[in-house]
Length: 370
Image 1 (cartoon, one colour):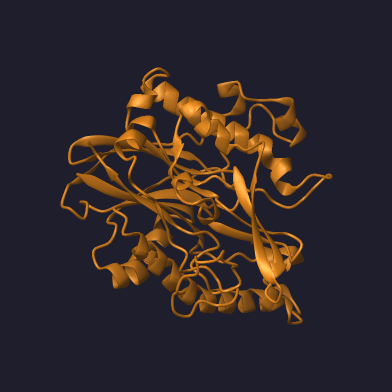
Image 2: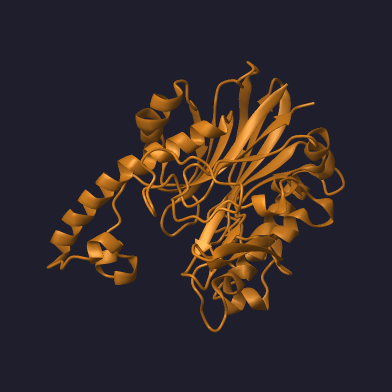
């Protein structure tokens, strides 16, 4: 008996228009920025047209990436609401996959843009085992003071003790696979942002992600008991917006690229994987082949890194020690620089920078429920 689970940051699955770029040029799409816009009404008209034209290609590619995961249970990040999710499934996923994910679970989190995490499920696994929903619990309301996690470092970021820990949510979903329990924690941690105050964006926002990771670990330990959590079936899925290692890219197309692995001393991921609390299954792949995102701010700053995670409880990791996770990179734009031997055939109509399935790659793994 097995179930296949995947996680994917689908990148702004919206059913509303964002006109914030009119008042803040930094948010304005680069295509619209090429034109002289006389007033807000004209900007809104242009932005609607651009968004609609761009969305169709993007969502076809997103659906192809999801189809390639072959997942029975799918954790998504950056979903606007259930209506956008239903429209995406009906208009795109169903056309590519037929029987889709009939059961969808999400709740409003804390994100200022309104993007949330969601969990989608089939009615049964590909092998015919029933997938039964048991319950869903949101932890979006938890504050730093509730868990005793407020620190001077958090205060320096402008976060008070009575503010909520999770920038989106830690969505806890209990299911039964063929009658056997599995708990899913769907996450989307605080993004890194841009450099500020002499720090990189990652360094400046690290205290927030560390608090999110500590809160997630506490939620799991309180649910199952600190001495018993290792023996239970649970999995953490999501975009943690942090990496414990990366692949630095140097050189250019003419002289050749060099790919240099670099470990990070500090990472919020360590909170969840330290002392064997969980296993990052992507670590089972070769060192240069663990990335789920290509980051660049120009030729002087380029790297590949893992931001998207499936973390298994020790019990699940033991019973699935031979299982290897898959990373779907066919929806990556052509500007992404692949290490030797990793290039894949892109989905049709993938562009140099866009359209693309997402800036992230889906991660999937098959889990034996024994």
